[in-house]
Image 1 (spheres, one colour):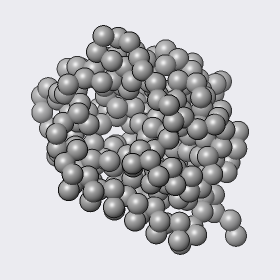
Image 2: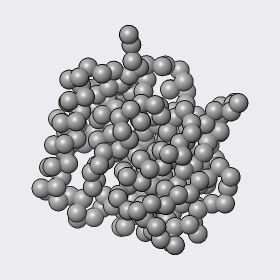
Image 3: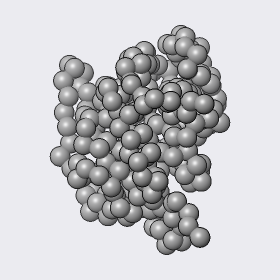
Length: 252
């Protein structure tokens, strides 16, 4: 029986036209023998503007639901996540060749690793790319390391939450993405790091598109009062999880 890695994508109408590029990047992935991918595209809303951009492929499932933000859409998509691992892919981003295979190698190779991340490059409007200067060393990321770095560096993590590949059971145990208007993926990343070891691959695993319509580029995303409240609850959740000493994988 073939094993599945589930690709979860939240999409709304303004970003729907990028879906074909995301699909092309998925089709270029080469998985280990016995593995296949299943792409779950969840619209954050119920419009007629997204479906025309969804590829006609038996490996693709499209669902809609009332709007609640990308975290809600991704969490609702978990109802279709019938695989061992869940990989995040935003509608406007792309996976470079080899990204899924590297995630699987890390997670299959060490049961104590709950999640995997990789190097991300910004994909600029002119087609050029730009990297980050805070990448950690390749290999395991110990519990608490992401929170410590994030807190000391102006609420900026050294690994990108949009590159996450997560064990499905761990993702469900943590309740999916945080119920926040933004930073829901950072909240998940810090919760994962509070409860389990992670992995960082130095090879590029994501092309993170920069474009005028993206949510993180809007003024509301940087509203000072809201951002402070988001960061406070993200940190509090991670610290409480750590204080409970719940660990993945569970041990007797």
